[in-house]
Each structure stands twice: as C-alpha cells, then as structure tokens.
Length: 310
Image (cartoon, rainbow, N blue to C red; front, side):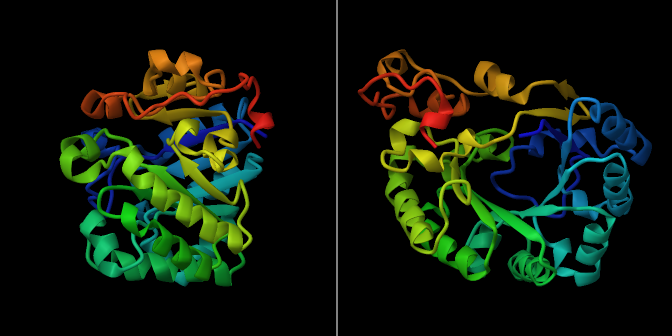
C-alpha cells in the first residue's frame, strides 16, 4: 500500500451540501495551476498515489492538465473525488481517463432525487451524478462511491445500497458525517446518533454481501468497532492508505497520525475494549454534543493488529 497525497485543489463548489465538512474553508478560495503543480511534484518524493479533492475539483478548467501532469510524474493511482455532476459529460470523463485518472469517487447521498438534493441543495444534482456513474462504468472506469450518513438518509441506507449495486459500482463507502463545517452549523438537523443508524448500516451491508461485495468493496467509515459487531472487517480504517494532506492552509505529513491525535477521540471506557489498541474512536466533535455513553467496550483479548480483523 503506497502513501497517498490528498490534494485539496481549492474550496469552490457547485453544490452547497448541508453536511459539507469543508464549508468553513471556502473563504480560502482556489489555488493556482502552478501552486498545485509544485505540490504534486514535491509530494512525489514521498507519495505514489494522489487524490484530487476539494471543494469540487471537476469545476476547474485545468483539472485534465493537472491529472496529466501527475500521470507523467509516475503516480500509480490517480483518483478524482467529486460530487459527480460534471461527470455527466461523457467527453469530460473520457478526457480525464485519457489524461491518466485511474479511479473516480463520486458522492451519492440518496436513492431518490428528493433525498439526494435536499442535502446537496442543488437541483439536477441527482440526475447528474447517476449519469456520471453510468458514463464512467460504460468507459470501464473504477468507480468507488461515498455516501455521507446523515439524519436525512440513514433510514434509507439499504435502498441507497441497492441503487449502488444496480449501478455496478466497484466499491462503496458509507461514511458517518464529520460534524464540522456545515455539519457543525446544522448539527441538530444533520448529525444522527450512531446507535440509531446501526440497524440500517448492518442491513445495508447484508444486502451488499449477498451481491458479492465483501470487505474492501463495501465499507463503513467513522463508526468504531464497538458499533460493528459481526461486521468489523467492513470498517474502512483497516484499508485507508497512509496519507499526507495538502491544502491552502498547510500540510499534514501523516494524516493517519493527525486523525488519532487531533481529529478523533477515545474515552476512559475504551481502555477496557478489545479494540482499544487499533480503534481511532469517533470524530471529536460528536461527543461534544452527544457524550460518550453509546461507546460500550467489547470484552475479549486485546487485538494488536488491524490485519487480524480483516
């Protein structure tokens, strides 16, 4: 598993999602082509994979140029994270693939137009992302979707999973909302209790398993192992590659360490859990509102290595 560069190209976006974790950074604006090329070149010394993210990278006129530049520098994996709207243009998808993009991660947050668009706050965004996924699959591209779990959609995770399976996505992730940016601003209407979402997460995974999606193909992010009994191998933290993050506000050299030290939190009772040595805990903002009573230690011998879970 190579080290991955998470390159935030800027924070402009053609959606305004109610849960956007980057919304508070929008005043930082977008970075220039030259600035991004310098980042791509400098990071090549330590990274062999790259993810273009934002904001929304596909609204940049220079994205094909940046992808081509990364490809020429020898990045083995080049991923485009996107809200999927611009991917509804087949020729644009074809241009990105020709330039060197190896995988795409569009974000689908509902199985119906109403459910998706009440969260993106943008008309036609549902039809556009569905068209985008179909375009990419018709071009034989690897498609790995992300769905943010919110108060709006958690009861419909099984239906969303059925849609993703029908679209023949290569991989999908259900990611519990990170309560910062717009998600913090809209906490009461956006962030559910983890214990409430779990029956729907487990049902969604059961549907995926029956369709041949095993661990690494179907994943759940930011839901600690104490919530995932019987489905521990589906936690995405097991397979998330080590990464560095670069954006307008600076560089995080080891994001895997940052998540544990600054991004997430553990509780006193976690020391009694068999997963204590490998679990990162929830995003730190969650217990600021909901406390820690939901996090119940799992008894048993301590697990020391993630590979023993997978």
